[in-house]
Length: 96
Length: 466
Image 1 (cartoon, rainbow over the protein chains, first blue to last red):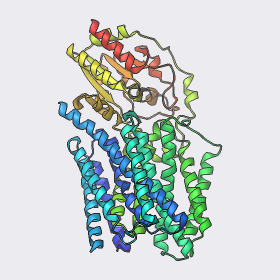
Image 2 (image 1 turned 180 degrees about the horizontal axis):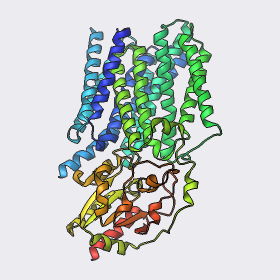
Image 3 (image 1 turned 90 degrees about the vertical axis):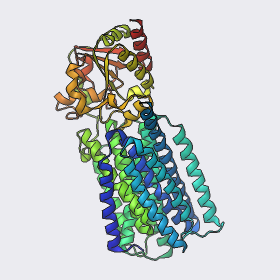
Image 4 (image 1 turned 45 degrees about the horizontal axis):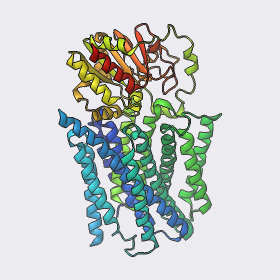
């Protein structure tokens, strides 16, 4: 269980971590990076699965289905798009 | 035992996500970073079948869950595989909107559950659920509008009379209904419905008037907001992986948004609350001196072939015309004649910072020939030829000279300071922001009309003939 202030500490430390991790990224990687961080919040899929898992009644099930489909789209689309972009950077490095 | 495995997997996932993002700080390790993050995502998804809220039986919930995962994954996989590199920004917007929608939908399930059971989760949890819901819903519909705009499905900017007042009213209404829900005991079902409708409309209304060059900033902002929404729903569901991953994206996305806004010399408030390029454009048009002077590809080729320094300024139009491979060919042939060729990339060239670098990397252009704005601007006076291809607003000297212009103050590439400037352009129209470009009328500027790829092809054959 994550309670009160523990959650707040997690939130604060994560916020600083995100800021620090990004601040060293060169401009050339900004677009793949945005795509990569877009993929990372695809973890919302996990939450959507939990929501659908304990959904009851037609409306909750319908919204839950919607949530899981969107979450899966976020994760898969974010991953494939990021990998495609980064692959090109790799090959151009290899040419040199 | 199972719950311990779940906790451990989530913990490792959170660690790997941060590590993966860190790996992305270098082109060499970036690909490894995203791959390992992908593995962690798969592990986290699989272990989630073991959480107590999910019954491992083939009931209606499980069937729907598997169907939803299959459907969402398939659509996203196919679209992401097929999309052209030039269209990547709007796809990022779309996947991001999906994430925001998922976060809002999680909140919707939880709030509907509260309204039907009449229970309460306590003020803090309900406030967080509502915050995540409104942020997720705004990101969802706003990203949808951003996607439609970049994809060319709708008009660039749209503005109702008293638009900002309407938005303010909507925002207030969202706050009020959100407050009712957060403090509701029990939560009213009608309030939940009203709240989500208002939040989705707000996302559309906020994004509608934003146009032109500001779009990447908005997409980046929505990316950060989705992260935050995911983190809030993580608190509601008591899921540490969601809290950490969401917060990391929220803060890093905020920094990225600030960097982009700074590169364009605009504050975030300015981007959101004043519409770019929809007004003001007409006022600057009038006082242009000179005329556009056309040049033939053959003459342009001669100019470049006998130059010693050439700076190429590619813009989004170059990418649309798929001219990057031809451009690389032109670079090679010029270099074989001893011409020193460099590329100048504006921070917002393409549709996002770094987008142009991706496109040039695709064509095999080496990194050390690509220069940032600060590094290349002092070199323009020594350049014999600046070749502008498909770029417009980022080379418009009005940004330096005319305080009335909407782009005044935006850092630009000083193409007008080169000895000669050749502009490859499809027609005589204005740029993405709709502002007339004074560079095109300058004495030392020559216009080479035509499709980017074809025009560069003609330049190549022109140089070859010499």
